[in-house]
Length: 593
Image 1 (tube, rainbow, N blue to C red):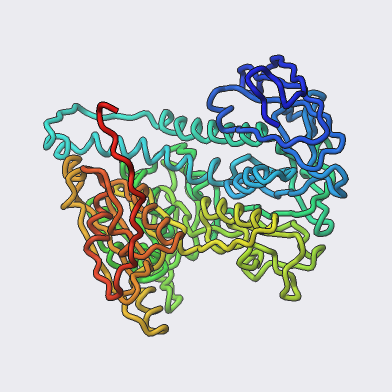
Image 2: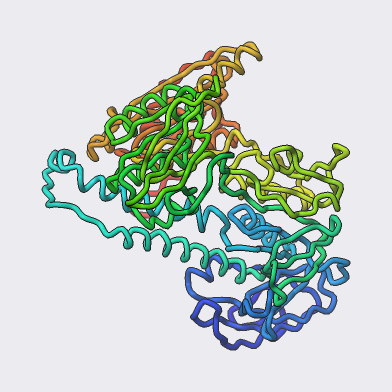
C-alpha cells in the first residue's frame, strides 16, 4: 500500500521506530500488519543517503513481496540473524528460492539486482570474492593503475605541458602508493556490491556450488566444516566466470612469471618486461609499465600485434601506443618454454618457436614475463552431468540465445541458465551483466535475446580504443556473403575543438555501415575518452537505429561527443531517410504569464 503523510496506510496504522543500518547510519522501521503486501525498496537511494529501510511484515496470505534489508553476519555461514526480515515470494513455494545464482561477479550481481526488481526471492552462492575477477583482479584495479600511471606519464611530458604554459619539476612516484590505490579501489567496490545485495535482501551463501539436480545445489569449501549446505531454487543461473589461461610450457611463479592477477599487485617494477599476447590486457599493462619506466617486448603468435582490432585502428594504435614508447614486439612466434628467474639476480628465459614451422628460433632473457594470453572458463566441479549437460572441449557451457543451458541431447535443460565468461559468448564484464538481465527476463516469461553486436568494448590505454560491432574486414566479408555494399566514413580528433584545447588531437573515429539501408555494422574510436564516446553508437545498434537516424542527434559544443556528430553527419546512404513525426506543438509562454 502507500503511506500518506500521517503515517497511515489506507486505514491501517503504521508505527515508526529507528534502528541501526548495516551502513552505519539510521534506518526507519515500520511494523505493518496486513494480509497482502506489495513493497519496493530503493536500495541505491538508501546507500547514497547511508540509510537502510526495514519493514517487518506479517506474511500470512502473502502471494508476492520483496525481501528487504537486514544486518548480515558472515560468521553465520550464510544464515540470517534474528533481526533479519524475510518476505518470501510465493507463500506455498516448493523451493527455498525463486532464483539461485552460482557466482557473484559483475554478471551474477547484475542478474541478482534484476531478479529482486522482478519480485523474485534470490540467493547468491560465492566461493571467493563478491565482484569476481573484474572487481578484485581485473578491470577495476587495473583502471586504478592506469589512472595513476597515466597521470605520471602526462606530468613527465614536458613538451606537452609547456605548450599549455605549464612548467613542472622532476616527477617521482611511490610504487607502493600506486599499488595501494588499486587495492583500496577494489576493496571499496567489493564492499559496495555486497552492501547493495544485502540492502535488497539477497542471501549470500559461501561455498563452491554444484548441481544435485536442476533445482538443487549443494555448496561448501574444501577443508571447511563451518560453511556449506544444500538449497533448492525454481531457476538456477551459472555465473562462475573465468581464470587466466596459461599455455603449456609456462610455469607461473607469481613473481617473475605471472598473470594479470599477480601484476595488479604491482609488487615490483621490472626494468624489462616481456608480455605474451597483445590484446586488451597486454596493451593496458604495457601502458602502465612504460609510464613507470619499464621497457616492454610483446610476443604475439600471429603476424601482427593487436590481432583483434580493425586493421586501420591497429595501425594508428601502433603509431601512438607502441612506436613512441620503449616497446618492441616479436610476431609470428610462440613462447613455448618459460623459465622463472630471480629478481635482480637471474633473468627469465623465454624460448621462442616459429608459429608456422614450429622450429625454435630464439631465446630471450628478460627481468619478468607477463602472460596475457586470454582467459578460460571456470566451470570445473559444477557436476553438469547431474542435469544432463556438459561443457564443450574448451570448457564453455553451451547455451541458447536466451542463455538456457543446452543439454547433451541438444535441447535446453529446464530452469538452468548460464551467463558471462562461463558460456564464452562475449567475455566482458558488462556483457555478463547484460546476459544476466536477459536470463531473468526469460525466467519471468518475457522473451528476451541480447544482441551481442551491440555490446561495446574498450581498451583503457592512453589514448583509449573502443568499438562496437564488426571490424571493416569482418563487415566486408559479411557483405560478400550477403551481397550488399559496405560504406565507411571517418573523422579525426584534429577537427574537434575540445580535443585541440587538451592538445590531444591524435585520434580518429570510423563507422562501417550498409550503403543501401544505413544499418550500422561497426564503429571504432581511438582517441581521448574513446571508451566514454562509444555508447552513442552501441546504444544505436541496440535500438536498431540507422546511421541516418543519428544525424539528427544534438551534441553540446564544444565537447568530444562532436567527433561522433561529425562522423554520422558525413555518412551517405542510398536509402531515403524515414519521415520524422513532428513533436506536439507547445503553447507559447510569455514572461508576463
